[in-house]
View 1 (cartoon, rainbow, N blue to C red):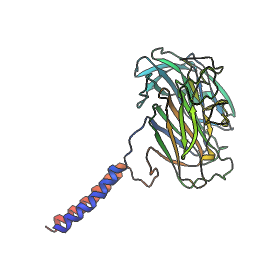
View 2: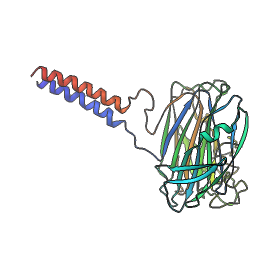
View 3: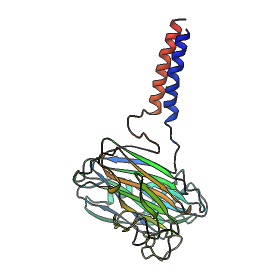
View 4: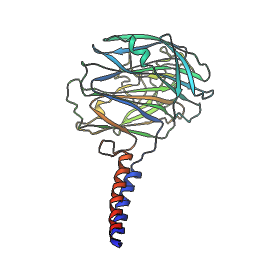
Amino acid sequence: MRIYRSVLAVLAIPVLMLVFGGVAQAGPLQPLQTFTGGVAFSADGVGGGGGNLDVETTVGGSSVLQAWLYNVTFFGGSPATTGAILGGNAVTLNRLGGTDPTCCNLQTYRADVTSIVAPLIGPGPGITSIPASLVTTNPQSDGLALVVVYSSAALPGNQSVSILDGGQGGPAVQNTFFGLSGPLDKTVPGFKALLSLGINFSFQGDAIGHGCGSGQFSRVVVNGGPLTNCAGNRDDGSPLGDGGNGTLITIGGVGDDELNPPNPLASGGNDDELYDISSFLTQGDLLVNITTSNPSNDDSIFVAILQLTADITNVCQQPPCGPQVPAPSALFLLSSGLLGAVGAGWFLRR
């Protein structure tokens, strides 16, 4: 009897470590959805005064898989919903959890608008403009953003799009890991590795230029290498750079250049918040690690989009981040089976 009790204790300890040791704390940017198999994204933003949100498909034979509308707000209250008009249709946007806890009550609202957007987008390639405006005036809004994921047989068959959203604010660093199905191959034709950021309540002076060292900014590190020291500003909310509160929104996407700014670690040029991160990736990588923070403690990354010519199989805040890690329910069944087997042996030999 003493032998079987010892076996029970030895088996139970490692099983419980598997169940509880791999649980990561949730961060403010949460995985929304990942798409694989010949997909790409389009993103655009407009200030709180409204305007046209553009959707761009870059290849023919495209069809919309999913579309989301965002409203990013500051000051005022935090109602459960806000309202907007998209393409003449009323939209109710729901407040996300894990929003920014900093000075200015920065909140993120989201709505699934696939049923509105999909019928408006032709097979492409091309740009479709959709008028958008706000209904809710309290809390105040820095603008609206539209994120669209589309598929086409003309896109690389293993291209993936992964979307995170919420409200990344404050100097605390958040790590996000994107697990791949196999070693990354940067030699495949048409290889792309693009990162788009949507940021609200970001102001870096009286122009839309890229200004480091002051203002409201966020930092991004990819696989340990510094991508940008001062992401932000308001090139979508105020293209001329003459706007204040109510226009402080930017999102990398339509009309943006992934090679801007010329030096993302120093002032100068324009930062479109659309980045080519291929130089930060190494042939054979199994993970892509993106680290975000807001040292100025006064703006918010409300969405991050990774488009990668590889199969993204999992997204997590703490590695390991692949299919080799059993789900909690599977671990529970495993531990229950082991404990049950040992317990049965113990009772049979009493």
